[in-house]
Image (tube, rainbow, N blue to C red; front, side):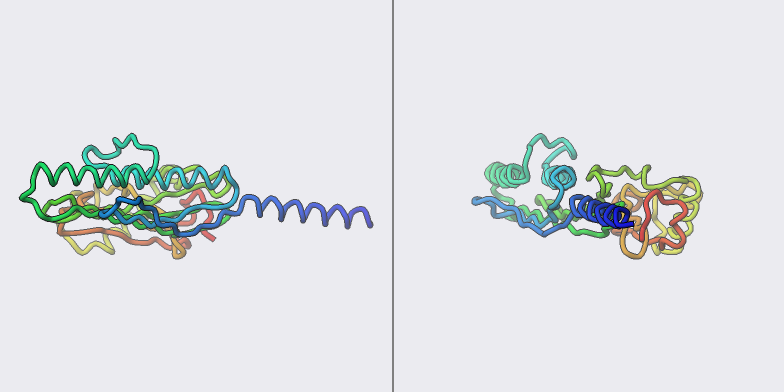
Length: 238
């Protein structure tokens, strides 16, 4: 009996130790450079198991780098957020010299938020606002979902176990929450958004500006409670 008790204690300690090693925590960090005057970056940074946290931080930083890319989206070749901030400032300096009559300075603000965290999944949002001298700035929100055990990014398709059933449920919520009549598809042509992420209340779906409607419509978003969506989801929301 004594041996069994010791074995139970050892197993519990090992289980606790493993959980502690996999536990990921987040702190908000501000990233800038000495010469930066145009860009504000405040994003969550993962700490804990080096492999898990490095995977998460790599994806978050990559999203910031892409957001600061001037020109073709997702074509950035820089390797750090600091380099991207520096490049953004340099792009503005070049632009202002070529077009001195344009007095409005460029602006970029990127904010990140930890939306949800469990033993299975971590969801983070990155909100980017850029104004490079146009009629108005542009805001883009991106959800990043991570496997909490590996830190690897989870594709939207891998969040769902039954796409057809989930689309039917999501379409009903979409119609219920839609206030504009200018979306680019009707209910029979419903498509899931590019961004889906876990929040405390359920799974949140978000269509960015221009994704399915004109700029004036703005962001379209809604949350499906876990009690209704849970049977279609690959990860437990509790």
